[in-house]
Image (cartoon, rainbow over all chains, first blue to last red; front, top):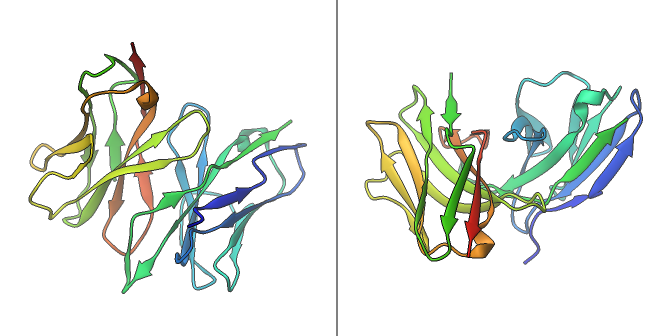
Length: 115
Length: 115
């Protein structure tokens, strides 16, 4: 049973560029959430996708956008990268069973470095 | 506002001994869930244990148990018979309600197990 997979594992981008991170949820899961984890901090919720729509959003600017595909996989896009966007980006998936979400399982993350 | 507090930046424990990692939370909701995750240096967040706010008994999963004291708003993780492989960052997290997957994380505790 494949868990949550994220790609790429590492990425280096220049300030002002755009980046796309990808996530495939655990088999059977239909909900994907994205988190940003700065060095030495706990993860911060960015947004969550269910049924191809953004269902909830954290306190992140519009430069952060996402998408969910019919196969439940998801992308996180960040435009106009800033040095402060350097972080580990984690994807978590769960199952929306009768409007009750099961426990979230995380991927190994994408480590983004902005120079 | 919802908040998770982990006051121990670092903890040391000898192999085969038990250790308690502290977590307190703040919420005005009656329905919420509490989680503990382990994050090794590889970055993946590994789900350890879950406690629902209406669960009357403390959760246990193998060597992990959660000491849930609702009136004190604490959800401490107890690891029994520590192993060298338990060395990692440990995060306490809270999910409010049951529909959303938004998790609020603490700042984490780094546990080091020595022989």
